[in-house]
Image 1 (tube, rainbow, N blue to C red):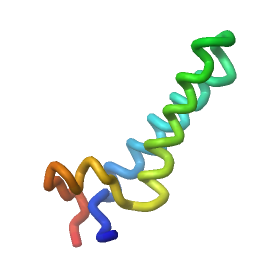
Image 2 (cartoon, one colour):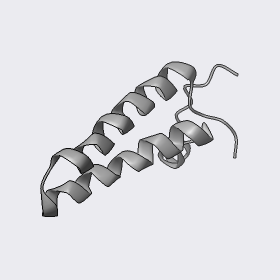
Image 3 (spheres, rainbow, N blue to C red):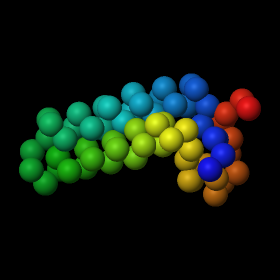
Length: 63
């Protein structure tokens, strides 16, 4: 896996991921599980690699 997520993109993914994950604690029963979608941007930020970027040929990493 070659890194394809840059530093600014990573920061945005962490902020969005935490925001979505917070919905898990705020919303009621059936909708609260939509907050778990926040794990996806957090995982891609942690791995520094996004599979969708690979498919689309996007690279925001400077290296």
